[in-house]
Image (cartoon, rainbow, N blue to C red):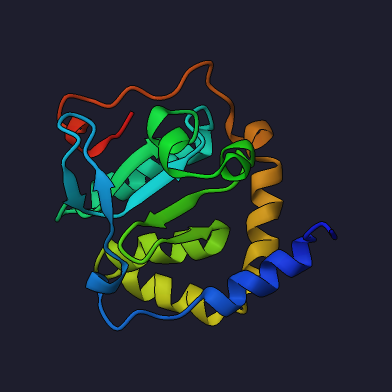
Length: 171
């Protein structure tokens, strides 16, 4: 059996990428960390020890006025339960997961979906980014991801959410 190449993966992601008609099409059902109850919210998985990733999560939290997104480090329990081993091992990839449709968006496609959820003016930025062909977007993503520790630092442990943020973080 042949191994999937980066080009094959990008082509497959390009086929899977469609623009939603509304935010409700990209909402997800995820397991709530306290109760195990199902909530209708998408989850953004990120590298918990990456300085850039943590700053990006801070950016999203500050602009997500409606609290639409949940967050979970790729090193956490939720990622281990809901993602494939390959996704967890590929630590340089931000992942946006929707359980409702069973879809996982990686790299720049995940960023686009997060921007769409953040509302104006960030949703406009998401649409503009979406207009750039996926292989070009992912090339840019990989360039930044490949040097993110060198440029933005690496923490010893995953970030600890503040008291106000705890309801939005999954373990």
